[in-house]
Length: 130
Image 1 (cartoon, rainbow, N blue to C red):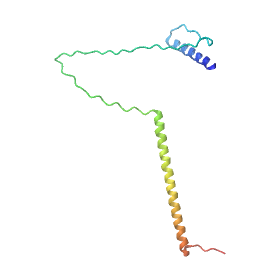
Image 2 (cartoon, rainbow, N blue to C red):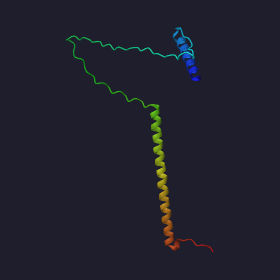
Image 3 (cartoon, rainbow, N blue to C red):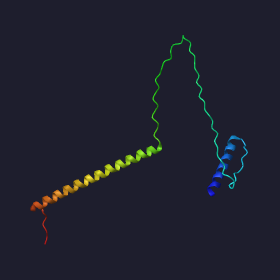
Image 4 (cartoon, helix red, strand yellow):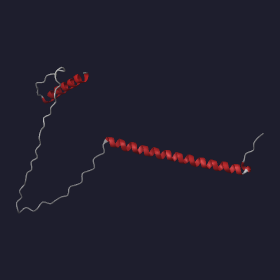
């Protein structure tokens, strides 16, 4: 399979880059594509938290408790900026279309009103040349 060779080449290239950056040379051999696929393993490093207790002398005044400052709101992600911009543009487009529709309806109503008035009042009608 072609993707397996590409993957193995990428792993070899990445390892060579890491070795060039760190200056270490590890024994690395090209994996055989006919052999069993290599198993990638990650070393798990455990993190242990240490707590240090400070002893205070009785003569020291009690510490002043300062309430924690609220964290600033995280800046919106680019994806959410895009989403909010698109929502604003869509809302603006809808308002624009509603305004056009309202203006068309008003124009149609005023034109029909003028037409009906002209039909009722014969003096407003223009003369027809025959």
